Image 1 (cartoon, rainbow, N blue to C red):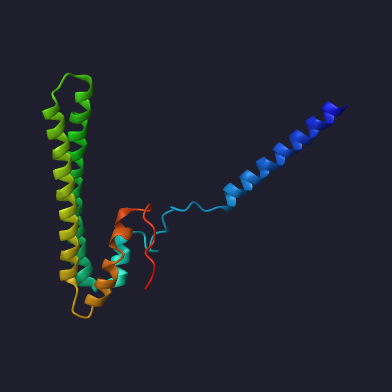
Image 2: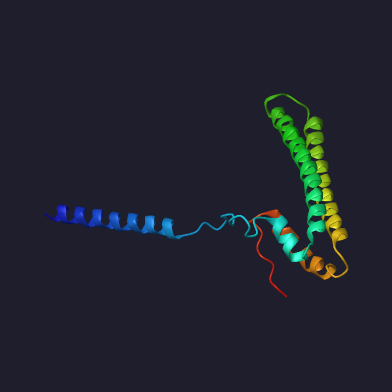
Length: 158
């Protein structure tokens, strides 16, 4: 009789814990859910809103984004290709000089990506009117957080 009672208690405990888990999953919103369309769906919308861009500035900004995106995609593809070549050297008797040159090429490509990103933001700054420059200055403090993804902590407000 004792074993049966213990079994019923164990089953009840598992049932309660499963119900709590299901409730948590239904009620808890994941931290990185994208917002609904039109509700600051991404960095583009945040930049437009925070800099108070007019229609012409938005059109010019969209052109900058397109060019920037194409450049970064090409550089990212280049890095993936180099990494494939680098890791292919693991299965062969390639010399250390080849490995080092591939790693250096990845570093050089990443440096070009960062330079491209920086120039993209200087181009955005050029779109701003003198009245928008203070907004850009404030935005510049948040650029790393806005564009680097969810893993960076928020900057404390001044």
